[in-house]
Length: 167
Image (tube, rainbow, N blue to C red; front, side, top):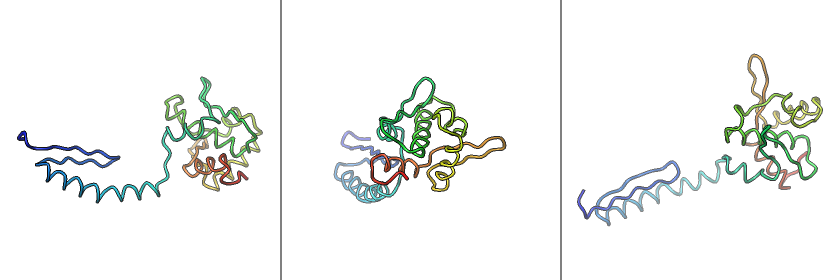
């Protein structure tokens, strides 16, 4: 490569490209690359729903804390049983992503032990949450476990911020 050659590496999300040549050629190539790719990325960002660890911590740090004993719901207000269950499941997701617990899904008995709520109430609300798509039921030969779904995270966030009623 001669000393008059410009080389530019672009990394944006999952996109990456390298351009080299004289400055005018590189500028044209970069402009073409950005104009053809960024609108699609921006549109996709508007319709893709996904929550990473940072999002979850930011959204739920007032309600969930990770302790040495595991994730715990610290309710500062009256919460419905559905909200408590889904907050616990979000806490499990956060703790799992932080490598504080070995697996994210939990059993009904785990929820009873941690939340201190009657098993029948937890079981009934979990059935409703699964039916609504807010919680995922994971069944194997021996146990049934539950974890929060992406739509469950959205529902929980919306109920806690008052955008929708918790029911």
